Length: 117
Image 1 (cartoon, one colour):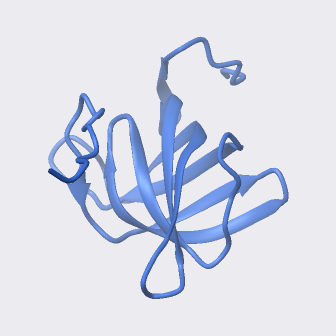
Image 2 (cartoon, rainbow, N blue to C red):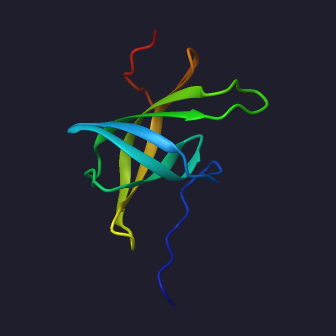
């Protein structure tokens, strides 16, 4: 029997391709999501980011029901998985430790040291 990875996600992910800006230890990357959820995202990048790297992720969702148009989200996260993709890009999994929605409602997880305004 072949080894099967264990699913560790506790929240659903949504398959959607949308632009994301990642602030990494070496600079800013403009990437695109494969999928995204309330606890993290899996993004496509031409540049690898080392496992364990701390990143800041910024993205905007289109207006829907509870959110106005171009509603911004900010996330402090950690790179928890890195894999080479068939298209010569990297797949990078980012687990969010802090999410701030727009200008209000900071959500703090796992003791993030993100400065709250």
